[in-house]
Image (cartoon, rainbow, N blue to C red; front, side, top):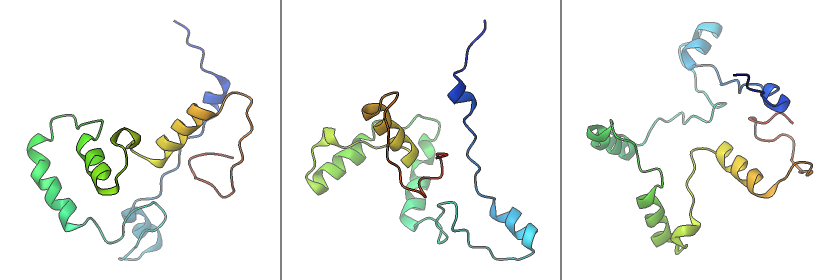
Length: 122
């Protein structure tokens, strides 16, 4: 079977992730590195987050609720937003992609500021 990959897909360059802290320490010879360039929290996770993780370890082998029902319900209650108007995604990349798929068509022109989200080569 011969699968034709569109040219624009072949031209996509992989996202270069930030270097791990251990690699930076080795490269520049320091013991303490606070990483700010990779959207990582230098303070670490909150104690409440760690508590929730430990509490959920017993269900680690199960798929999570992909619809984020309880989170959406709580946000709806707290802010008074309609439940069905709340969408939870895994990353800003997914949200940008979803908006573009919903509103942009082939040949459309889109105005994007520079600098922009690093995932996209503009």
